[in-house]
Image (cartoon, rainbow, N blue to C red; front, side, top):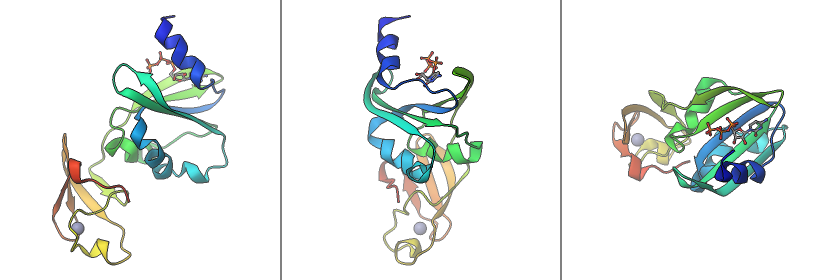
Amino acid sequence: MKEHKKKLKLKVSAISEGTVIDHIPSENLFDVISILELDQTPNMITFGANLESDKLGKKAIIKVSNQFFENDEINKIALIAPHAKLNIIRDYEVIEKKEVTIPDRIVGIVKCFNPKCITNSEPITTSFSVISKEPVALKCKYCEKITHENQMVIK
Ligand code: CTP
Ligand code: ZN
């Protein structure tokens, strides 16, 4: 095994069953935890942040034992962790690897950039159609204004 791989593997111990979400940008670790509602899970979670990564500079990793996500659920993190890799673990083995894709519609998660939008003054869940994925551009269902990737704020 290559030396750098050995180091990464040692940082957060292996799990027997569950999901490993790898290659999360470190600065978005806690938003990923909250989007996946992992702050409410009864399952064991281990995570590491600011781990060295060739691709991201610094990456974060989350390991959730005994939990497996639907594609719809996991794709919610694509906005803030577009290069996330999922590893499905059964009996200590990686049995499947998945990537995340940005969905065509985003409900909740992001704030509308338009300060006059009704979603910023009333308790209304935001809803956007994704009009571009690279870079991300979201069109608000309520005010029709566009929120661009560099303006995105997580709710
Ligand atoms: N992993 C784990 N528990 C296991 C098996 C794997 O936590 N029982 C974690 C590894 O630590 C790694 C990820 O799942 O972070 C993917 O495992 P593996 O495919 O063996 O590692 P790599 O070959 O490094 O994967 P990739 O290059 O696709 O990121
Ligand atoms: Zn709006």
